[in-house]
Length: 401
Image 1 (tube, one colour):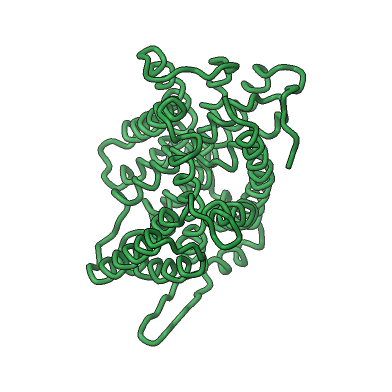
Image 2: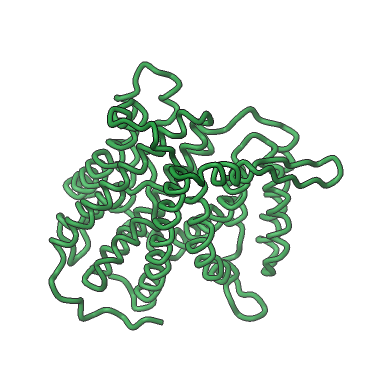
């Protein structure tokens, strides 16, 4: 059972995610159109534009696309880290009773898609590197599709999808940290670790001003970028040190204030920009058999089949074993609809794809697989939920705030 305050937060988040999902789709469609039109040179040239920042001997020289993937996505992962900390300490994941069902479902939703991809790509060490791509879920797209059903969706089902997606993001963070790390620079990593200790000391000493955390966080991001560990992880580490339960001089929780401030910027800005930069794929030489190549087939089947099998199967098995229980007012067919929606990987899958493969040929294959698998999951998830939802609006919907 969710409290009225929780429900208001859920519906507020859903509105942001719904708008963000629409912008994501528009940005992805724009990228596809541009990359398959006479404007392809403009699209490719824009993303390849070199952007250089230099302070003395420190030089960061990257094309615009990598600034998006390493810089803007660090902001996204910072927000994810804030959400994870809040949910684990006092939110929907703070007790085993609340977290058990989405935790078990998220585990299945990562293992089965990865297993399907590995089975299809077995024997090729190069393509096997993309095994984690179908294990991800795009919370903005998934919640955007759910929002199309309006207030007919039970609040408990929204909570389940949100918790599932947050735990899925946590799994993606661990995967990136453990499996997609390049050669390490010990010096840069040591300076980054020192920055993390400074942030922890600030937290323990009761510092509530956000500016010092941001300043140290930027320095940490540069160090992590230079260390070989993916720079987005710096955003997560900084987020975990932001105070939640103490209050600043204005009586606000610094974490909650940051989360509320950043969420619309990330949903309506960062994610659509990422989608625009990474969804473009040239279809001029595309043939139907390209979809059945190992990489796109493994991703598409992992997202569409693996997610629904993993999420629904593990959730059902968990309830049978007494590890968790189905929330009141939710039917198994509705859980199946959410399991389908969890196969909308899009942003997170594309992001992991950029870490797994750097060459253009594999990048195009990743985009084909992610777009096809995510589209199938979104369409079938919407249809299943549409057919299993009540025909009238829920009467208990809380007022918007």
